[in-house]
Every structure is written in C-alpha cells, then in structure tokens.
Length: 173
Image (cartoon, rainbow, N blue to C red; front, side, top):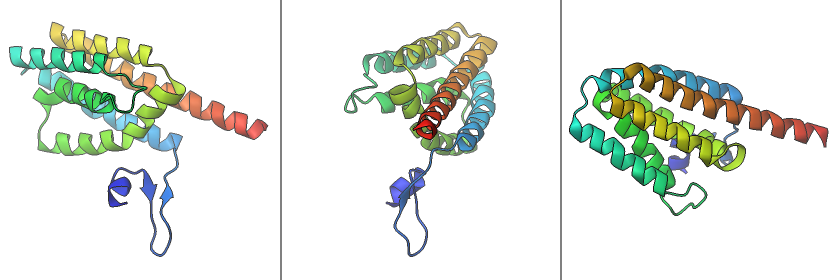
C-alpha cells in the first residue's frame, strides 16, 4: 500500500481504508507544465555534453521501445518507455533533476497509460519517440526541445479530451 501511495495511485487517511486516487485534469496540467520546464531545459543542456556512447544509448533505447507492445502488459513497454526518456535526458541530469523528474514520471505514468491504452493511440506516440530520437541524434537542441514539448503536449491534450468526453458521456446517461 505504501508503494501505491508513493506512486499517487491510492490515497489514505488515518482510520480509513485506502481509496484509488482520482484522475484530475488540474493535476495532469501541473505535472505536464513542470515536465515541459524541466525536461526541455535538461535536454538542451545535456545535448551539449552528449558523446557517441550517448547517441548509441538513445538508438538502443528507441529500438527496445519500438519492439515492446504497449497493449501487452508483460512486454516491458512501460519500462522501455521510461528508459527511453531517461536516456535522452541523461547527459543533462544532475542529482536534483533526477529526483524531481523521477517523482514527476512516477505520478505521470498513470496519465501516460490513459493516453496510450484508453484515450490515445500507440501510433502517434511511436512517431513522437522517433522524432525525439532523430532530433537528439542530429544534435539540434531546438528541434529536440520542440519534439519533447510536442510529445508532452500531445499526451496532455489526449488525456484531457478523453477525460472530458468520458465525463460528458457519464453525465448524458
């Protein structure tokens, strides 16, 4: 239970049974605002330090991500997804960025899963990940920042639209 609580998947109060955390659009927006600020800056500063090993690591992480099936819960997709994003940012990470982003990714994963499994399509995400990798490998920091920002914007838009549509359908019943 403590693990689920640390991942913001359940909430507990003293002398009460734990309950599943709500999906809140406001939380989604806060998380993605912070991710855009920190990840874009981290990617930009890291790209200045990247070497051939870093480029190879991104290529390998992209291959692992593309070979994993997001619909197959045993495929390791979510670990490959997290690893891909981490490898892109790795050269720009320091202690505090790693801690803060780790927590943001942890809380954001349920929204990412909603996007991929419920409201979105893995195809759109595949092209976004390929663009991020290509921008990284080209060494073009502005292209990389744009690709990361658009990827985060896309997820936020899909989850928001899907969430609102689901709530409208519930209200109409």
